[in-house]
Amino acid sequence: MVKKSMTWILLLCLALVASACGSNSGKEAGGSENANGGKQETIKFMQYTASGAQEETLKGMIKKFEEANPGIKVDMEIVDYQNYMTKLNTMIASNTAPDVFEVGYENFMTYASQNVLMDLTDIIANDKEFNPDQYKKLAYDAFKYNGKQMGIVESFSDVVLFYNKDLFDQKQVAYPQDSWTWKDELEAAQKLTDAEKGIWGTYSPIQFYEFYKTIAQNGGGIFDESGKPTVNSPANVEALQWMIDKAAKYKISPPLNDDTFAQPDADVNAFKAGKIAMFRTGIWNMARFADAGFNWDIALEPGNVQKAHHFFADGLAVSKNSEHAEAAWKFLKFMSADPYVVEQRIAKDWSVPAISDETMLEAYFKKTPPESKKKVIEALDSLVLPPVGPKPEKWNEISTAVGEELDKARLGASDAQTALDAAQKKLEDILK
Image 1 (cartoon, rainbow, N blue to C red):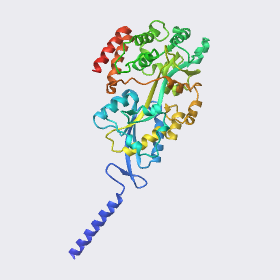
Image 2 (image 1 turned 135 degrees about the vertical axis):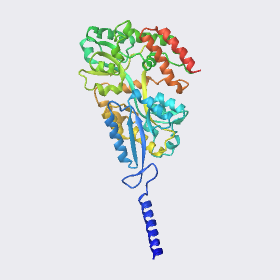
Image 3 (image 1 turned 90 degrees about the vertical axis):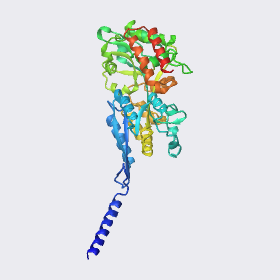
Image 4 (image 1 turned 90 degrees about the horizontal axis):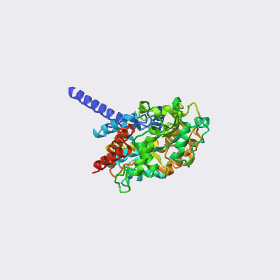
C-alpha cells in the first residue's frame, strides 16, 4: 500500500515538472515571454540628440518599433550632449556598453579604430530586404571604416547662416546672398550693429569646431593630404585673426571677454531675443526659433576664398560585445529609414533624415520658417567633415589641444600666430 502510494506521488511530481517545463516554452535566460508566446529580447539603447527637445518624439518612435517587433523591447536612455561621451566611454571601458548607441562621425571613427564596434558588413549582405541606396551615399559611407560598414547613418545636419530679416529691413540692408564673402558680411554687420542697444551684426563662437570650418573657407585645414598637421599655416592664421577681429577690431560681435556668451545656449537665446543679426548655427536649432518674435531666414555662409559648411552625420552603432545582433540590426534599420521615423523627424524639426528619396523630403522643404530651407541641401556642395586626421583614436586629444590654444587667443593671452604655433607643436607631439 505504501509502495503504491509512493509510485503515484512520483508520477504526480513528474507530471508537475513536465507541466512547468511546458509552461516555460519560449523563455530563455535573459529573455521574457511576450504576448505571442515567443522570446522577448531587450536591447539597451543610449543616445543624445533627443535631449532637450525631442524626448517624446523618440519615445513615440520606439513605441512604434516595439509594436512592429513584439519580440524586442528597447530600454532607452537619453543623456545630454555635455555628459554623453564621458558616460559612453566609461561604459565601453567597463564592458557595459549599450547594445546600440548614437554616435557622431568623428567619434564613430575613434570607436571604429579602437575595435569596439560590431562589423555589420555580413549582416547587411545577408539581409535581402535592405538596400543601401535608400540613403544618401556620402552619409552612408561616412560610417564605413577600412571598407567595413560599422554603423548606419541616422540623420545629418549642417551649419548655415541664420539672419534676422527685421533687423536687415530696419537698416535697409540687403539680405545675405550666396555670393557673399567675409568682406560683404563685415560691411553688412557694421551697418546692423547697435552696441548701445546690445544688437550685434554677426556672431560665431571661437572654438575648435568653428575654427576648422572657418579655415576651410580660407583655403586652410588642420592636416594636409598626407595627414601632416598644418595648423599654423598662413591661411589658418589669417582665418583665426578674422574670427578675433570681428569682436576686437571691428566691434561687430560681442566682446571676447563677455562671460554671457560663454554660457550654454547663450548665443541661441540672444538670436531668438533679436540681439544678433547674423548667426552661424546648426539647423537643429530651427525648432527653437519657430516662435521667435521676428521674421528670419537662412543663407549659405560667406567664405573668403571659397564656401565651406559643416557636415555632421549622426549614426547608430552596435557594441562589438552585444549578444543581440539581429535585434539591434532591426532597430538600426527602423530608426534610420522607416517612413514613420522620417515623417516624425521632419514634422518635429529634428535633424534631416539621410534618405535619398527626395519626394520624402518635400514635407521638410515645405515646412517654414525658414523660407529658404533648400539651402540646407545646397550647403552639402561645400561640406567639411570633422578633421579626424591619420589617427582617429586621437580625435579628442587633437580637438582639446587646438581648443586650448584658441581660448588663449580669444582671451588675449596670445596672438593668432603664437596660439597656432603652439597648437601645431601639440599636434605633432600627439601624432608621434
